[in-house]
Image (cartoon, rainbow, N blue to C red; front, side, top):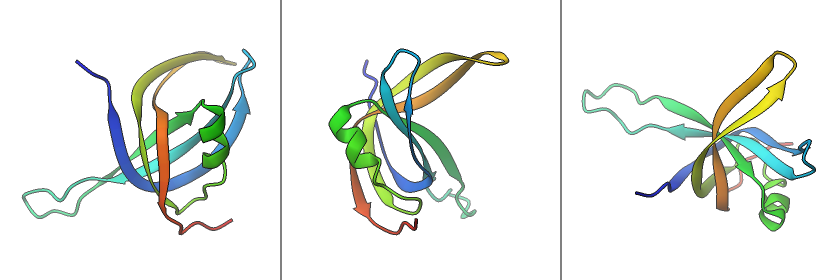
Length: 108
């Protein structure tokens, strides 16, 4: 079995750089991914997927992306737990290993 994810979509929440309590830096963003058209002909929906980039070189590149850019990402599905004021918070995100901008469309 393998944990490989490849998605193409539009940046819906721009890249945000953060430093974790451990000292590790990451860039996170949200990707809007359209679903395929259903057989019934109904209008397709979409999904919002949170993505995290830990690699320094890729982090710097992704940090320049903007809302509206069309991108492709590859990586693995990860579950991460962190502490917040209200207690532990669990989230599932794509840990991005490679990424590329397909088309700009962003705005500052």
